[in-house]
Length: 335
Image (cartoon, rainbow, N blue to C red; front, side, top):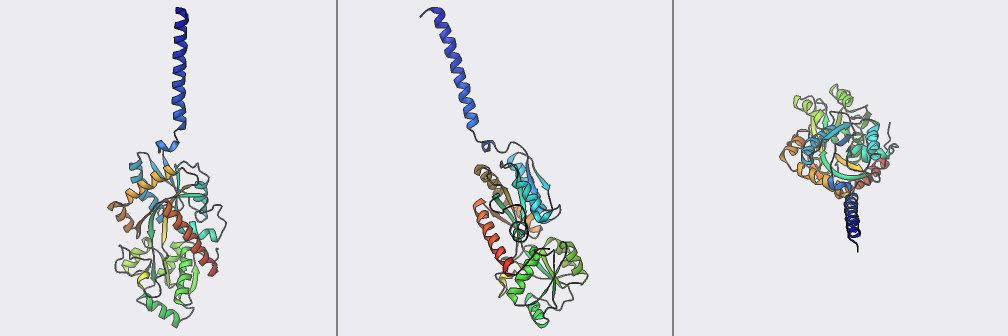
């Protein structure tokens, strides 16, 4: 081979090797799934209720510590309306990359779809990430109602059929469904009085216009402490730390099956990569084990109740089936 040909050959060989090397780097980079570097940008938690409610509080309780754990901003965006359907459909249509997540209230996710067209499938359209908190409902009555205990409530109801009234935040709401469960389990007749929201229901109870209501603890605590309401029980399996002397319905004979707790969970769009889901869920689990998170949950009349993606998926399916069956048998309809 001539000297100039040898030099030319070496130049071409070097160039080809460089091209192959660059191609290899590009191919390797292209082959790396996007979740390997997750997260690289802001994560948005879409809360299905307005600021100040338990859904919003649950989202904000996890947002700040999750941001610190992941090293990227985690913000809360409230999208209330249409019984959770607005928020759920925003997340359903979002890119399945883990950057847009739904913080959902159980009533919207597993009861409302049995009553109205929501535009989303609670199972098929979402990938479970983690359950955050459980919030049992607190059963309260007006202070001049002649009952002191849950058992006395039923004796009163049976002695006065149809006279006892209970307020809910609307037809088809969790409070409405809970009232119908109480009627069935206690074999009593109560009159349902629906309102447009928990606030008006509480206002009329304070005014003595209805006899009882049930909802999560935060909006009731001040009225219970002031004596404007009498608390009878907590609908769940365990007592609330914030109301340690109030029995859970699991402790009351005949009502151990009355578990009408609200729960608040995080879901991602369907088809979100499993490694992204697993990373988010693992960080949330670590946060929820802290005493600070447990304390904040207790202050809201709730319990830290982590579920991993598989557990939350199974739980969601069971809740959807069980509430649906009850809605049908109790002939519950929406407004």
